[in-house]
Image (tube, rainbow, N blue to C red; front, side, top):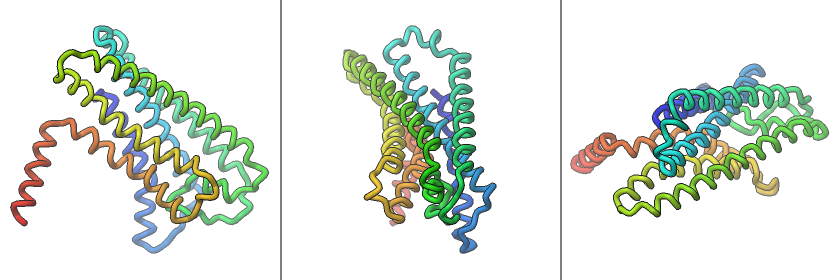
Length: 254
């Protein structure tokens, strides 16, 4: 789990560093410009990090399934080599898909100017600037990614159904609490990531507005990567004790 958490932290860091520094620079210098090369790089690295995160979350769900439902086979199914291979597959497949996605997106001719209504180069906003008749290839890629994402989602749902059935059969309340505590952070992160991203990309066009699109972009591109370390760190007893001491010290000062 800690090996996968390290990979997840790297993906979150990459996602934040792709969008936030440039947005902060533009805000501080009161500008809204980005070079064409910079826009291509933003799309590539953001899709790369977001897909890697989703694949890692799926692998972490499998890790929870094996550790709870098949604990005696954990060392065989999830040894160090198997974990390294799964993490490498997540990074490699995300890299190839993001490369294909970026190349296809920027091969479309832009017919409606070059002003994006976002704080970073987002694919739906770029598609709005392209010719309406040239979306078929990009639409096919998006449909393919949605099918793949839905498959991962079904796998996670099936895994958690099996996990909850196994946990409810644990006779001791302490054992059930410990098993649930290992799953809740992962469930929280997956729910936050999927709900914000799905609503941002699958909302009907009638609900689209510049302010809503901007808010949703912040929700799925900045909030989940920023909260993931906090959500997983709450399992650390030493960190929780330090937070309690900090909060109690602040209240005593006031």
